[in-house]
Each structure stands twice: as structure tokens, then as C-alpha cells.
Image (tube, rainbow, N blue to C red):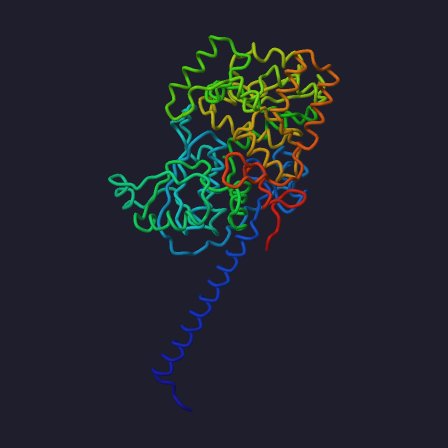
Length: 492
């Protein structure tokens, strides 16, 4: 028998170490391949209350809606989902973002910022929300969205951190490279113009987030990621979700309900210059407000010209006639999703007289339940967002950010009925009817005919090269992402 010396033991140890290293390399490769596959086949969670419905088809969307409504038919998740594998990559720097606008403008902007950071292999710092605009809402990201879910659900795409490392925090207090990216830019702009800046400065700050990515012409992987962030990663906080579900279940106990997004708040009328139906005193007040905000660039506005072009929100009185013309009867349960209506109860009188079952969150919830949300308009808007998603029919009176983002989310949830009003045609018909040129039956028939194909059905986005503001908004109809029955389509 030959004795094994120290050299033999060392050789065996060396072989064992090499095998272990090879196994580790193989396992890392497997994890990376799984991560890459995830980019093309996003995982969509079953909870849709701000995060989305389960996605693969109509069944997933229906289950998500049921979960939003708190229905017992949805089986409870027995254990928390396993974390997706972390994507390992060499970061090219940190991206800080200050969002601008209201809830839904910021929501779309966050989706774009995640997509840009992923495309450039940057590390994203949890975005900062707008605290300086008209609403002056002091809420942080974590008071609106579930920040841990946001970070963990996207860990197979990119690294997201709650704050910069201390060394970089100190450095950026002295000097921070800050800029607004060019609006409606494609992925080439970010690769050629922004990536070199991020590598040079280590931290780059975007001081605006709205409409910074093109609607069209982006690689399918980036469009799918925008959808995944919107429908999966951006889940509201447990507090908002719980109260939103209570609102929905209360409404659903009374049968089907319609959400009317009545965009007739003071800020919208002042910004747009739309004063149809307002008194001269109100018109002066709205004009003063418009001049008081320097970032509202358009000051001199012809209200009637804009209205005839279909660029104004419908007034409460106009929307009352439109609802009647579309066939909504007086027993229809209508939830008003909006802030404070300009003109108050006086401007809502006609709508209330026609539809006695008109409700708002303030009527359904107790003052104690709403107290934590008072003076937090973004959190209040999140409640309206949840109810809008769950409604049987959603009708926006104006195509602002909430109207468009909710429309797209409802398409994802199985192309749920959303009546997209043709305001230009409606203003023409309203003026003819009120001027006596059309009978009620003629008016009603024309309104119904004009909206046959505007009910949220699957449709192609309108593309106008070189005019991104005039073409259809990506988030209103994210067609690249949608299956034939809603949900995220499989592009693997």
C-alpha cells in the first residue's frame, strides 16, 4: 500500500476547489439566463389594486379585478412570493429622478425612468415625488407606493436603492449634474447623450420625468418593461389598498357602477383657459391664477376657440346631457372621481338632479377613515384610481393623465369598457341641440353613433411621425404589451 503524502492531499483539495468554482460559474450563468428571459416574459402578480391583474389573458385580468374588489372567489396567497433572481451587472452610475405633475403623470414618468435606467445599466434611486406643483402634496414615494415591492419585483431587471451611498450623498450636496432629458426621446438618445454623462459624473439627476420616452419606435423589450413597471411594480401602499378595496366593495354591493372622472377642478380650468359656463368673476379668478404660475407657459387663451376644437373638459352640465344621450338612466350609480369641483354644489346641481345616486369617496367613507389622507391630494387620487379600475364603465370628461393611464390599465384588465368621449363632436352636437337645431332623439342618436367605436375595444395606436403630442399616448393603449383578451402577451 502506498501512503498518500501531503502533495496528494493538496492535489485533491485543488481538484475539489476547481469543481466548486465551476459549479458556481454554471449556477451564475443559469441565474443570468433566467433574468434575461424575464425581460421578455414579465411576471405579473395577481394583485391589481395599483399593481395590476394576473396576466396572461382574460382569466388573469378577471381574477385581478376580483382581488381589487375583495371578492371571496379569489384564493388567498398562502405564502409570500419568492424573490426573483437578482440581475448582476456592472452599474454605469446612479440615476436620481425628481418627478413632476400629479399622480398619473408621475406614474407614467416612473415607468419611463425605470426603463431608461435598465437600458443604460444604471442604478436607480427611488424617485422623488413632486412637492412643488399646484397640489403641494408632501407625500414621499413610500407614502403612495409599496417601495419594497417596487424594488424587489424589479431586481431581475436593475438595481434600485432607497438612497445614494453616503460618499456620493456628500459629493452631490456640493455638486450635482442635473438636467431635464429631451421629451419624447428614443433609446438612441439615451445611449449616445445620457450614458456618457452618467459615466462621467457617476450620479446624474433628471429634474423632470414627464413624457421623456417616445410613444413609438422603441424595442419591444423596452415597451414590455414599461408595462411591467406600470401593471406589476407600482403597487399602492397597504393603507391605500385597504381603503380603496373598501370603497370598491361598498359600491359593488349596490350592483354595477360607473366612474365619471369629472375633470372640472380649478387648476385644470386655469391651466387650459377653459371658462365656458363660468361667470365673469370666475373667469378673472382663473386668469389671475394662470399668470401666477410661471411654468404654465400659455397665458392668453381663447376659451371658446379651444372648446370648439374639443380641447376643453366638458362642463358638469354638458356631461349630464351626454350621459342621458348615451342611455344612462336616472337609477345609474355614478361615482365621481375628482378633486374639488370648481363652483362647488352649484355646478353639480344639474348632474345630481338627473342622477340622484351620485356618490364620492367623502360620502362613502367616514371622516375618520379619510383623515390620514386629507391634504394629500396624490393619496386621494390613488383611491380614485383604484375605484376607476374596478368600475363597470369608466368615463373621463377630459383626456388628462389620469384618464389616459386608467384607460390603458383597463385595456390590460381585459379591455374593460371605457367610453372615450369625442369632445369636438360633442361640442358641435351640444350646441346644435341647445340651439334648437336638433331634437332630443336626433341628438341622442348622433351621440351614440359617434361613440360606437370608442368603448375601449382593441385598437391600433395612432402614430404621427414628428408630432408626439398629437399622436396616441403609449400608456393609454400599450398595444405592444397586450394579449387578445388583455393581460401581458407572451413574447418569449
